Image (cartoon, rainbow, N blue to C red):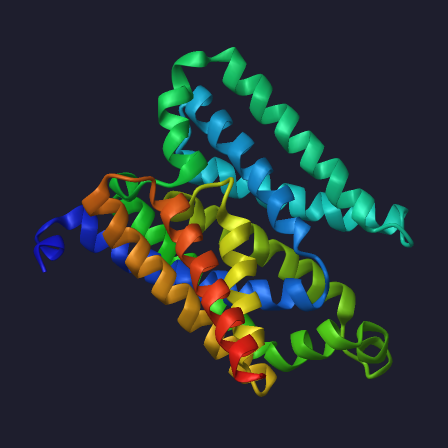
Length: 267
């Protein structure tokens, strides 16, 4: 209980629990649509935005949000140029993000220490401003998913059928890609840019193994993510470890336990 005596730990736990809901909630639709790599792509672009923000003196999360949303729009536009090879758009944006981040970091080597927390997550860096941003944008993402849950479900399983049924697939896909960019930006403080896509995929992989329906899969994915985030923040505080790596490793352990238990129960 001593953790709650510190304001930064209360903010880290609150922000972590919000992220623990958003990442699997968005991630399950990415997994079903076989778009898991988009998380890696946008996270690297967000890192470039952080570097640009630090260099220019702009609030880094705000710069990361602008960069990642622009990249999301870029993926949508490039995808139209290669309709049969949509993964090329993700690869191009990923390369552009990595290249931009490397150039900006080498341009101002003094920002490497500041970037470390964004790379691997750092619970000490969650300030009041970050908390407000996470709460506001997190609420927006939850409302959007709640309103368009059925449409997102339909598109994930049968995009062509959804289009025939009159669902505005292009509009929803565009908005959803922007939500992915927002989720990645919000999660960087806790998990880190290099690991945020893991929190969007690994709890979902565990949730799918235990679920009896799609809604149950969503619920179990969130449960596994919450366990990983809360325990990861606690362990990272006591053991002085990077919060992102600790959270992701715990989520991998949970996945292995789920797979092992399921394998034993099937014998």
